Length: 182
Image 1 (spheres, rainbow, N blue to C red):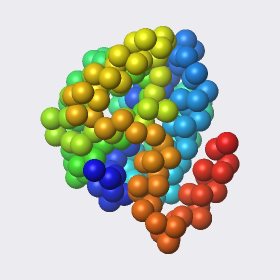
Image 2: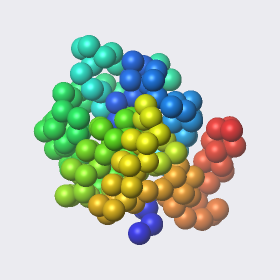
Image 3: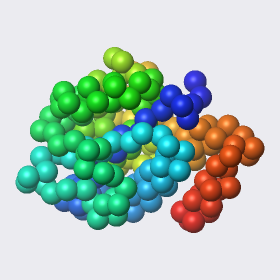
Image 4: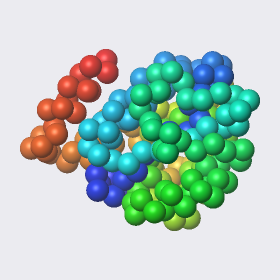
């Protein structure tokens, strides 16, 4: 099951500064997620972001401020993104069969969203772009998702599956993003 550029959508889950603060290795999560976001943008892959209880927890982290338009951001109170019926409906309207998730927290919002989305989509989790407050919860959630049929992968694999070949028209642009990401 390779990812296909024309069949994919990317969802950034709850990347708010207040939630990011206690996340282990949050710099890795953000750096890898930003690479994924920027590559998807170059490849015209649709993206949405969710916010958990934004009136209390704030908006997207400043690093993501330029990445999303307001119509691409969905507020939610449920832990799963599927608890926001408008968000889920809009994701379905994209007409994509593959959903790539990144964000926080692995054992809570990412895991619940991935499990719920599995009903209607092939779900992929960018393991190097998700995080949690403690390692044990992170590992247990990844194992649960994997045994449930969710594909665990990494940002580089996702991007290069979208490209499929160095002959892709956007290969040089993407290669530059990868090199600049460190």
